[in-house]
Length: 525
Image 1 (cartoon, rainbow, N blue to C red):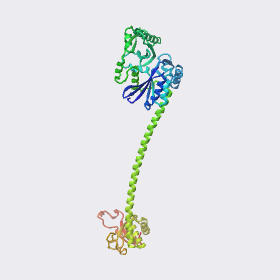
Image 2: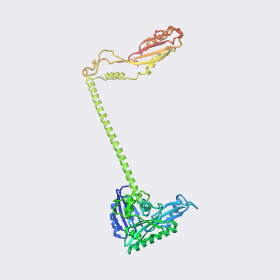
Image 3: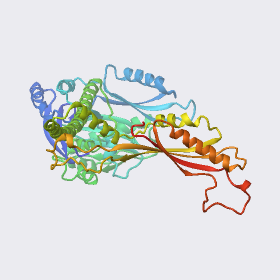
Image 4: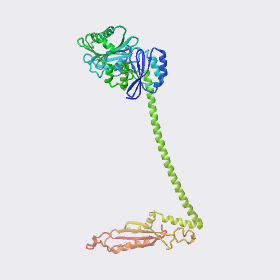
C-alpha cells in the first residue's frame, strides 16, 4: 500500500508524527506530551494532516499482557465473559484487546486467551481529543509489542525467545522493552528503563539483572524449562553490546545480538527511513502492514472513522448519481434533437403538400367549376381508387336468381373491376391544357364489374340435355336482373377438353361442370 499515511507514535513522554508515502518514512514533527506549548503547537499543525488516514502506534509502559484460562464457550456468552474480565483487569480503559491462543487438550479443555490493555492513557488523551475534534480519521490503533514478531521474522530463532530492544536514551536513562514470544504469540511483555550513568560494568550488571529476573519469572510460570537455555535477542546500541560481551552471560541464557541496520536491510528498508532507530523502524513496518486488524479499537476514534467512511460513501454515491443524471440528460438531449429533426421534416412535408393544394385550388378557381361538376370528379376519383368491390351487393345479385337452382353447386365466385372509357379522347392534367375550358373535359372512365361463376350439376343421372337446360335457365334469370348487363357462358357439360378420357363409360366421368361471366351494368353496385 503506497498511498500517503500519517502515523502517530506515542511513548510515555513523546509523540512522533511520521509521514508514509511511496514506501518511504519521514519524520514530520516531535511533541513532548508533558509540555502544554507542544500541545498547542500540535493543535495548530493538525490541519496539515486533514483528509489523510492516520494510524496510532503505542509504546507505553502502562500496557500489560495477561494469559488467562476460560471455559470453552461460544457466541455472545464468550464475548460477555471476556469483556467482564477485561473490565476487571483494565477498569475504565478504552484500549483493550484479546486474542485466542490455544485450547487445552486435557481436563475441561478450557480456552487460553491473551488479554492486553493500557491501564493509564491520561498522558495521550489530550492529543487524542485534538485528533478527534479535527475529524482526523484513525484507521486503527496498534501496539509495538505485537509488531516485535514481525521485526525478528527474518532471523532464524528458537520457538521460545526473549527479545530486548532499546529506545532513545533520555535524561541519563535508557528505556528498553522485554518481550517473550512463544512462536508468534506474546506471553510476556515489560517496558522499563535503567540509568546509563556510571561505569560500563554497572550498565552490564543492570542489564543482566533485569534479564535474570525475567528468566526467573518465566520459569516460575513454567513458560520455559529449567534445563533449557533461553535464546535472548538483543537489539541494543554498540556501547551496551560491548559492555555485555565483557561480562559473563546470565545462567541458562544464550545472548544473540542483532544490529538494527541488519534488520533494516533484511526488511529491504535501507534508505527508506529518514532517521533509522528502533521506534521509526517499527513505524515503517506498521506502514507496510496497516491492512491488518487493529489491536485496539477505542470508541471515540471508531465513531469518527465511521463518520468519515459514511461521508466517503455518500460522496461516491453522489458522484455515481451525477454520472447517471448526466447520462440521462445527454440521452434526453439526443432524443430532443431527433424529435426536432423529425418536426422539421414534417413541417417541410406539410409545406410541400400545401403548395400542391394551392396549385390545385388555383386551377379549379381558374376553371370556375360548379359544385355539381366538382362532385362528379370527386365521385369518379373515389371509384377509381376504391379497393373494396362490395361483395355483399354481389352476393345479393347472384343469390336473387340462384335460389331456384338447388341442383346447381357454385364452387367459385370471383369478381373484378375493369375500367372502360366511353370516349377515345385522351385527357391528362398537364401544363398544356391547364387553361382549357372545364366544360370540354372528356368523359371520365367508368367502372365495369365482371363476376365469374364456376360450379357443378348435383345428382347427375347422365341426362346432359337436362343439365345444360338448367344452366342456361340460370343464365337467363341472371340476364333479366336490372343490374346485369350480359351473361356469357364460357363452359357447358360435354365440352371437349384435352384432358377428358373418352375410353371409359360415361358413368365413370366426374359431375358435369359449367362456367359463366356475369357483367354488371355501370353503377350496378
